[in-house]
Length: 295
Image (cartoon, rainbow, N blue to C red):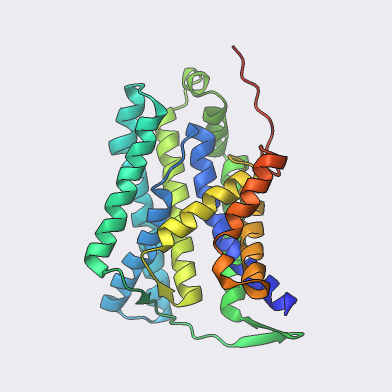
């Protein structure tokens, strides 16, 4: 029983980790809580569902559709920064204005999806129809293995980009000091826009993975997962990519264990219960570091 729940928790936790990474990437550069991040996560599977219903649900079509939709959603995320957030930054107004802008985009996307698709849950196709295998007393589907493996691969790719490329070096420079990075010849606005692109890209893929895992999507997934990704980011150490991975996995495993051994009604509450404890005991998170403000 425990092994089964652990496997389930790691599967969903790896998806939470992907969403949390995108949230943390934006925070590390702008110190901005992007409330629209969860809406892009939800937009991915809904757009994919529309395309699959039009084009068919063969495995090849499904893969092409998810990739195309992920890129489209990423462009929308980058476009949000280019059209709405950059002008606000250039006017040097308070951060609350930028946060309210992301809330506005979140509201437009969420209500747009409800207006088009309705508020009822929608079945999400599974074109692969893979079998399961037994590990001891646990039943593990090949889809769980594929989802977890794909999530790990995407995390490694993002880590390579952030810590092993010139773009990643520019991201880390902007996160440390945007003005100094600009004086060194880095196009700060371009780096920020690419950060939104990458974060939204993995969020859209994660949304499709959730749809494939549960074979259903609904209009509450944005709010629920967005809240959990924020909790996971703070739990792991906000702005830290390794912390985002750790936080997402912990939240996924804990909520699965709580649903199995206590009550399924508490599965969404456990993330915030853990968050409160961490904020009291270690406000910087598991892997976070104290920042020093110089005057």
